Image (cartoon, rainbow, N blue to C red; front, side, top):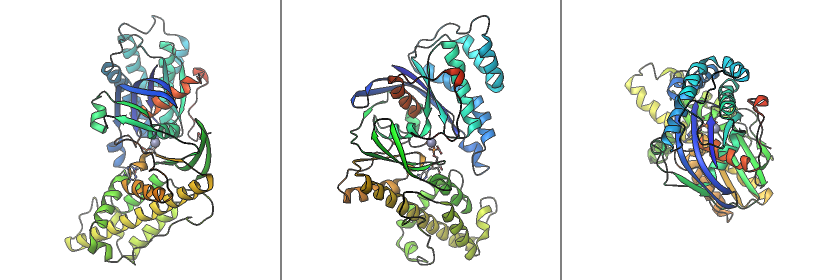
Amino acid sequence: MKILGIETSCDESAVCLIEARGNFDKDFHFQILGNSLISQIAIHAQYGGVFPNLAKREHAKNLVPLLEQTLLQSVTSCQGDALPKKIPEELQILLARERALYEKLTVFLHKYGKPEIDSIAVTIGPGLEPALWVGVNFARALALVWNVPIIAVNHMEGHLILSMMEIQPHPNYSQILKNLRIEGSMRRIQFPMLALLISGGHTELVLSERWQQYKILGATRDDAVGEAFDKVARLLGLPYPGGPQISALAKFARNDADLTQKNAEKIKLPRPMLNSGDLDFSFAGLKTAVRRLIESEGLTLLRSDLETPLRSDIESDLDAFRMQVAREFEDAVTDVLVGKTMKAVDEYGIQTVVVGGGVSANSYIRLLLAEALAKAGLPPPLVPAPGLATDNALMIALAGYFRALNKEFADPSELRANGNLKLV
Ligand code: KG4
Ligand code: ZN
């Protein structure tokens, strides 16, 4: 079965075409036929976070070129002209709603015929609603013209399912963009399974006792963990997205014995809700605590030091301070994530732990979780292949494939974006 995946929930516009066969526990295998992604990180970085309407505009600009690139990479033939002489009224209404897409899409549809695909999988949520709608309307227009079914995909299920995949050859970003013949299969999953989903918008512990059935055991009460990484990075004068930046600085600090000793007792952060007795999280307090640390050091300059060059004598102190805060922040976040995950493992007799979402790229969290699981006699957590932790359309195509096997098709005219969509 060939599935076209479309992802526009946040700041990555992505399209991916896969061919897949089998089922979760029976000979599952997939191959990427075409894959394209445009990250808007550089555009949002100047504002220190993602702006929904800017994201929407960029998705509208990116989707048609991404689709064209993806189809050209694949061997899927799509010659001819898919648009009838008279454009159906339903399509006209739809395209009128997405004016920014309209022109490019009509040119595209005149240039190419229907590709050989079986269905279109699109992220309907959770995420930024204006951004999600672009992908949803794009998928609806394509489904209408090509007469193929649509599958509504939950973005978080996409992260979860991608983490379960054994992928070969091990891709990285550039390879996947060059479209090596990447293939994958299902790793061994034993139920009950626990998913720790950590991204820019989510922090959730999810129990799964059967394929595609989920129960949320705990979630963040305020900021998501990725959001906390991004906000703390901003306080420290580091660019967006903050996760990889903080992680790199923390690693430096851990490898430097002097730095680890110096001020160690002064630079301390709380472990919010670690012993709250439930499986919920809270990360907003950590950000406030970091702000206080910065202020207590008289370093209010941090926020703007990217633009304002600091005096060199402060600079070295500042660098050391920044590294130590980064390390203590990553330690605090990791303690809480690992602590809560192990509590859930214990309470629910978990056999397999899966970690998904952008923050699952963090090697320190992976390492400490693997150590804690080993102590409990469990295998290491399943994590996404390199380059695939952050948003992409492969995960959407994969999650869509398994839903297509159940024939869970959506009615295109009823399809809606839902920024707060929950896993059930
Ligand atoms: O899943 P994702 O691409 O987008 C959402 O669905 O939110 O996650 C993006 C988040 C950002 O907050 C980014 O800072 C974080 O993932 N992130 C990391 C790392 N790489 C990305 N956080 C911690 N450590 C990393 N290595
Ligand atoms: Zn995501």
